[in-house]
Length: 320
Image 1 (cartoon, rainbow, N blue to C red):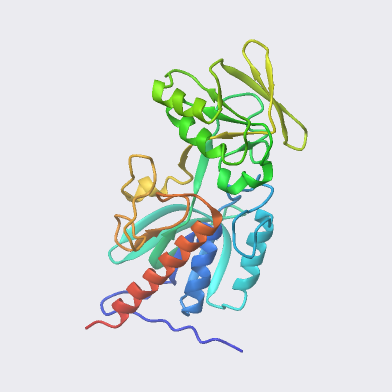
Image 2 (image 1 turned 90 degrees about the horizontal axis):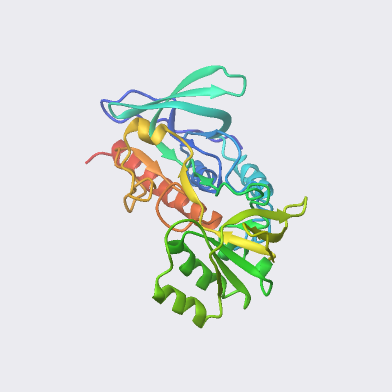
């Protein structure tokens, strides 16, 4: 059955190419597109490339999709968007984003490098973040399997095995205590300058978490990405099944700075309770915003943003 797409134009505004442009085609972006598609909104989703969790063997803790490969989850999401004729997913990178009065103008670059321009009434940033891994040999090669970032995502898979936590002194204690929920054999490996406080040492010792403060020079693992051991500067090797780290992160796109979004002290995009950034009409959802980072939570952020976007558009179309 064909669907009639309603094109509204609030008084005093130009008709735009679409109602909403969603930048990013991960869990947040695609779930937002689903909700907006069901609202008969004209939506363009710009897919700029590989998602952050590409190297992960599976998405965990996602109701009905626990254990699904990341690529398969996105394939299913795209498949479920097909009935919504008002939603288009385009392989394109957004190179420029500007607010023009009440509207937004975006410059796109397609797969062939061909430029184009699109206008929208609202924009949703679902661009995610990039992890900055410690410069240790083997860290990148084992990322996602032997080197892990989230015990809620991966703790079950490595439960009851010898584990390690690696990072700066201030970050290690909390993460090590958390990881000890999944294993009785946890070693806290302290990186770089800074020392553990006496209170931190006491808390770790109370949970029987060992502390290693020698520099780590490399990680050794299998070709499939499984960790085998941590190698210290002395040459000593510590056999471990996995190591958890708190990786530093940065925003995946410069569009946020380009348009002047407010950024939190931790580098996340500030958003209100309605997922709106400090720029009117510009929303953000998923890992690029403050809070916990999981696929199911990003999807929920996307749905929340989509609802607020649709209600804002409706108010503009139906003035008092």
